[in-house]
Length: 287
Image 1 (cartoon, helix red, strand yellow):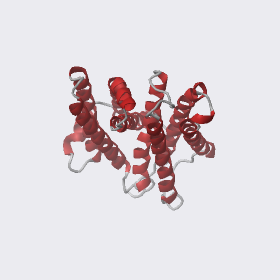
Image 2: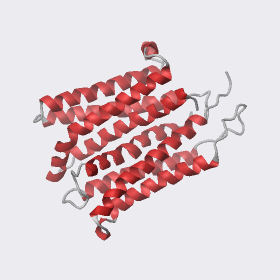
Image 3: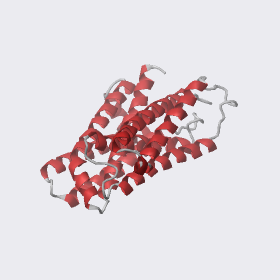
Image 4: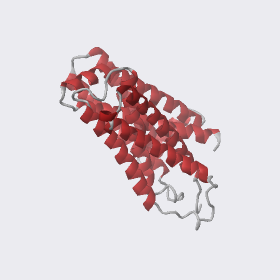
């Protein structure tokens, strides 16, 4: 891939990861146990800042792909028919809502109702952004992308990266331990979300129509080793997360602390390779 495609790859990784962080906070904020509420209150501002930084990096990489920031303005000139314009608009909306949430958290720390309302608005805007992002690539002239598996790829990516990053931030900051009262069920739920995202991706990928052999312009050959590494890293990350969430009774907390960062690293590598495979499969049919 050329440099602009790498910029696009990073954009489609960073933005969904920010949404995954917001999703994790929204689920935690819904917890009724006092421990979860205390954890949420202690990390909500820092995690929001990290989500903003991820979006800032995503926007920066998107400029490298567009070539000029002014092209984004032109792309938004026809929101009624342009999915690219809608994607840029939703990136602005999601980033703006994150900024609003941070301001509210700083000014109205005790306004929990307002904070949660803005949090859920951020989450809705984030998933709407991912939806428009996926629709940009679901183009009839690129049959390999014009499938439901493309939508699942982008939506599942937010959970496969955002949730492990959220768990890693909690562990790295010594904020929570898996065996604390009130947290074990929540963290197992989050691990289950990651597993669900991975299985959904596998199922939709298995039903994706492979028409490359019949197309007049077949995609560039992708080394089998890259495909195998993609699945190896992704599966390793899932297994490590499952181990972290469900074997706490038979191992030490010190050992468990290393599983989440390694799992996140594996999933990140798997997602990078997955996006590389996706963008390398680009080819057009027809005009």
